[in-house]
Amino acid sequence: MSKYNYKVALAQINATVGDLDNNTEKTIKYIKKARERDADLVVFPELAITGYPPKDLLLKPSFIKANKEALEKIISKTEDIAVITGFVDEIDKNIHNAAALIKNGKLIGIQHKTYLPNYDVFDEQRYFKPSKENFVFELDELKLGINICEDIWVDNGPTEIQTKKGADFIVNISASPFYIGRSRVRRDLIAKRSKENKIPIIHVNLVGGQDDLVFDGRSYAFNRGGTLIAESKHFEEDLVITNLDGNEIVPEEEDELKEIYGALLLGIKDYVKKNGFKKVVIGLSGGIDSALTATLATEALDAQNVVGVSMPSAISSQSSREDAKKLVENLGIEYKVIPIIDIVNAYTAILSDEFKGTEPDVTEENIQARIRGNILMAISNKFGYLVLSTGNKSELAVGYCTLYGDMSGGLAAISDVPKTTVYKLAKYINAVKGKEIIPKSILLKEPSAELKEGQKDSDSLPPYEVLDLILHAYIEENKSKKEIIEMGFDEGMVSEVIRKVDHNEYKRHQAPIGIKITPKAFGSGRRMPITNRYEE
Image (tube, rainbow, N blue to C red; front, side):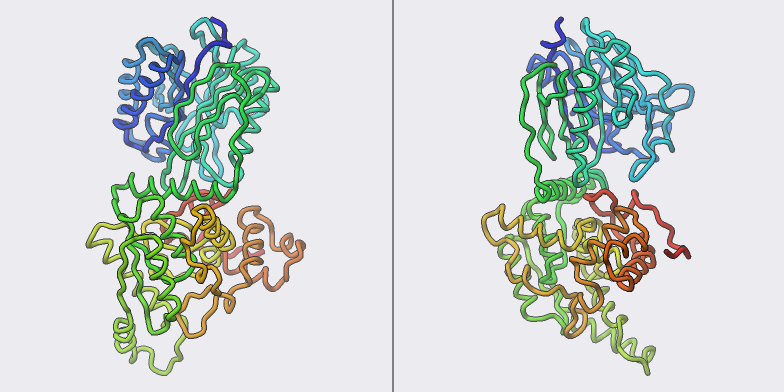
């Protein structure tokens, strides 16, 4: 068979960690679809059977056994078609991130992952042993090299080795999570590998939300000249058929805000669905963060599954109440108004003796935030709704948020979105929808927590346009205080921002999980100590 006429199906599926039965059934369904479209080979993502990342499930012998039983079920459904899928292999009590090559009910071969990533959100060396060999398999009179995710990122790595061993084409199965700019780097890297080795490459990536990660899909096929010949959909399941020397296609144009929007929608949708929730509840302050969160939730889950709750205090402005109401009308979601004035007064009375002789300060401000958080959690407990907290990355970074207050919730949907991007994304949504979803008055008002009279964010923080640049340099680029000051920022401002970031680690350790969209998000990819006396 000519390799140029060989038809490969890129099966970009949304697998759920631990859901072995449904992942297996989905795999079998896509095998059938690929066979119906006359594919010779269908390729699934990395660890498609178990979902990615399975984390400490990998330490359970029963989980490893069940995953191998699932593979046997898939093997039995491969009549007249070849299949490559990811699973966990076990040899001599060592486990491996593996790819199985199957055809006609028989296991042809297994390739283990060679390079195990151990940075940012990846922790594979905790579990897996690396491969000692990169094989080339015989398949339908062709020679095939299989490698797994990180393997293709390594110069002079498995792709080069397999090419030199005579492979006619390479298949790379991946679970490569999204962050801004990653897809372009990934596509360019695979094109480079294809071109420098003069070999077709099939790259199949996972799609879907898994805790703090979103996998964007974007599976690719390149011909031997490094030309893109197939591309799957972004942020959704897809099945793309191509031969190994197809015609050049133009990749879908990438827009940063569109990418962020797609990632957040998928992250919210899958977190809610995969964790068994049907509805979410959101505290609506009339501000930009809660407005964006509610808008994203409505788009991801549909209006009937979103509940907005306004909890005005004596401090809440009339304009904020009106803005929250206007937003709800635009979104068409359920709306509740639960005033907290009496509850605040009750707290004040109860604590009056304890606080005698002291002046009101942030303590009284935070009581309001905690009352609101408590109400939202009560609604969650009573009706089984998931609370979406609404804090952004800028505020979470410097601790401009209240523990057990506005930080309460099960998912912090925009906690990796800087404040300046929050505004850009809100404007983008209005533009895409062709109408005012997020009211203009919310976009134009000066940000405020509204926990005391006349309060503005700028009373406590630098302008967000400046703050976000400092935070980007410190958190995402890992620059030192000295390096950031040399970028032209005020020394005192930089010192204070860094102090706030470092001293609020304890808050972030207790924050709800968020959705990663930047190269360095708070959470599993940034593991800072709470007790920490190091200062720049």
